[in-house]
Length: 274
Image 1 (tube, one colour):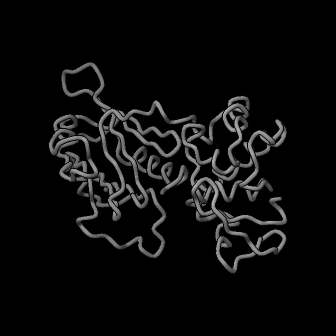
Image 2 (cartoon, one colour):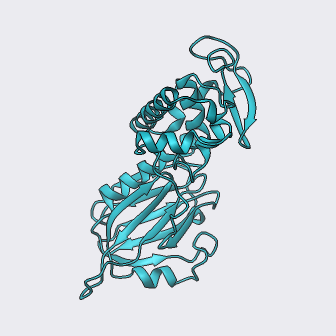
């Protein structure tokens, strides 16, 4: 599914193009994407409000909304989960028509859009809209999402908390990085890229890492996140193109190894990541 960098790109698009625009209509009729809300429930909660701010922790994104005219309190939070293929599209006011897109990397399928793939839409008074495009229908839209089980953001977690959350227990290192309750935002590709960059085996037991190794892992993870955000997604990682049967480590040339760690397909270099 989209990882932290992709979700950050969607959040940034919303922040840049959708805030402060009054909501005139809402299409929340997709009962799977908008569960457990009944059709019209999200619409009734959002009509007449505007989006105030776009927030993200790991892969979780939520938007704060304004009060309606005459209301002093803010409105509900709108949670948006992109699923495995979700993208956010925001169109400018009707007299402009410019479109901003963020979210999952679509590659050659970027221009493929079917009307039924738009699972949720906010229409603004100015004629523009914010839409969730989700071909696989694995995203989620809900009011006031519960984030109590989501750990601290992988790109913002401090050194001591990282040591405590990643270095405890006997889990394989990659499995711990993928545990969203430990730290939030790391997915399969970002984990493989980070561990390759750090020269650590995905099978390494976390309690065998010393503080120096944990500190270096945190630095590498933050660096990989920043690079992925800057370059357009986790698919731009240095080792990612080599995660294949005939792939070779771009650092030493050894044949890449494939296995399963934490229930996920994993690739690593048997020489550099001992």
